[in-house]
Length: 449
Image (cartoon, rainbow, N blue to C red; front, side):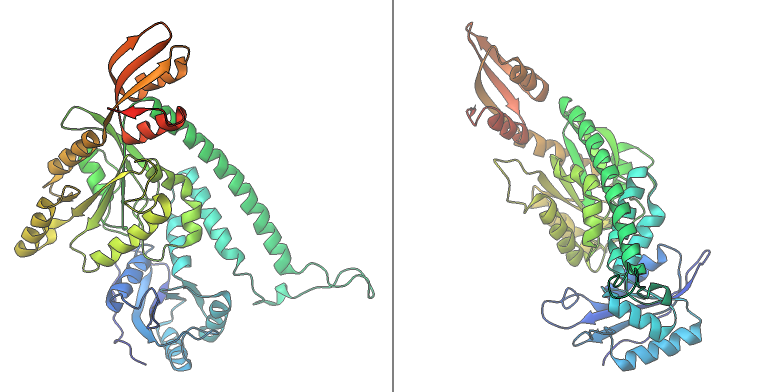
């Protein structure tokens, strides 16, 4: 069984727990890790551990031809890790991939320490970083959903008890069932609270829709520089740090484009490979800002060795949220611009290559959010995308339909209007999303000029 030598990481600052990081790389065809660089995957997991100030005693890649159902790893690796955990006096082992509840329980028994998988580690980070009430609710919901599947008979207090008497009573409610019921009750309450948050966010969104400002959403792999770029474009002071998931809660600011047009820029939570489905579901209220956006800026760290793999991870999550780039209902999907960030960290040759690639495409911009190079070009690209997306439509509306007339004046730019006593004929400039909404509103009777 091949694996690389143990690599030690020195962690600065206060430490809470000594930990050992294991990065399983399953070579089976179709495995998410099969086509990724093992060292990059290990560095990714180590970065997650660093984000919550763990003292990493050792980090190691473990190649697996086939995962073991009981322990994931083979007996030899389990024994080697047990000895290392004992020698390093580590209280935690982090497995950079998914563990089943049975695998987690068996490894904890074998290593006599706490074991968490990648999902548990990400949930731990999110729990430590969430600041707003909404963020805390979303993290708690994801954590409880995750923990519910982890209720296994690992401790004596979870042994089944009997209720009633004789042969009639039968088995009573076990501690596991009680714990699961309590978790289900809490999950139900959290969902109700988040539904209220979603309704409130929907009211805010509808209020913004009444103001004809396009929404621009920043998305990207965690630590790609979204918050730094957000600060650069908006002259804001959003927390930005060279750390995974430095920003969890969404932030919005108004920006002025070169044409004088006003837009709203939204910074969202960073994505990561194998982002837990429970977490995506819990953060759907936040990620709805991406779905509602007119333009999505996909910020990429083009200096990262795994930049292409990160791009694929983000695209998969975006496809799940808003569909493929070419999909859409009557132009109802957001425009996407790829932002190649951190060009200041590239060599001269690499930088020239990235710039040339951006020059050849209207939907790619190369820049450095740290130095500001290329940010003006990004604003121009946003301006151009918004202008190109606008359509001039000629519509005829009954004068009695005051709601639609008011909607047109709110959403678009009315270029001309003629009334004949019964009908109003207007020529109006609208964004594609608003044009699609108008067509649906009027039964698809509008026509483009």
